[in-house]
Length: 372
Ligand SMILES: [Zn+2]
Image (tube, rainbow, N blue to C red; front, side):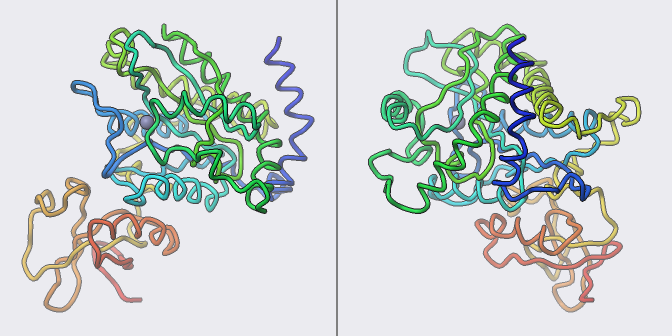
């Protein structure tokens, strides 16, 4: 019953929020809804590492599974991942988080879902929880200490460092007032779904000013799947099926969310999407494009001789590198990704340059690098 009331409330206040987010009338223009899934950590920051589970890898797998499942559940939804490999946007954590939010803003995300696994100094603490942003003075100060205990520096902004008179803060407050009911609706759905797999439901929480939520301009949450530091939760997370179950919990919550908003998202009949039609390659394009015979890619290195695509020098791109042929002496071009537009490739370029500083975007056609 409570859900129904929230759903009705959402449908009444939606036009206000839609206008404020600058996306008015988009549905009538046939714009697809957009979700950005953020697999937390990556690159220099693995997150919590507990025995054989590293948070960065675990949440990446769950995120890819969410994306895969959404393709079978909703037909007019675009899903982007902030990262599809072991990478980060910036060596500084606060900047990394901010850039993830900016990525979602650029994509025009209607919903932002950052996925993490939790940790606590007290190993008895267990359960799933979902965080939303609040800029309520009392709450953000009250919960700051709690967050500081287990979140890394740079995950959140210290309330002391916020200039309450700045335009940026005022805009963030205005956005937050509009977005919070939406974020909470999604968060509650998500908690309920996750706890249906036997995890204790710690519910929706708000308090610390998470960097990633502060800079994102729409409704967004941080999902904490379960506590790696708790033996029961750890046992659950290590189970073979748990990644799929957590992804189901999240993707179902995303479906409920969009259906509650406006009912404009069409469900895909499950039988119309063959399981194997969503390939790993497809997920790894990160640009939402299908496998392309022509488009844009990121050239990591070129060589005069052929080298193994799985060579150690490809580091975090190992196993995900494609070989294209070019002209000239350095004719073996080793590239990453496959994008329909130069712009989409350009968005991934900054990350590639953290490892390959000379990487750049090139055009390809039928296995060859072309200049036109
Ligand atoms: Zn985390």
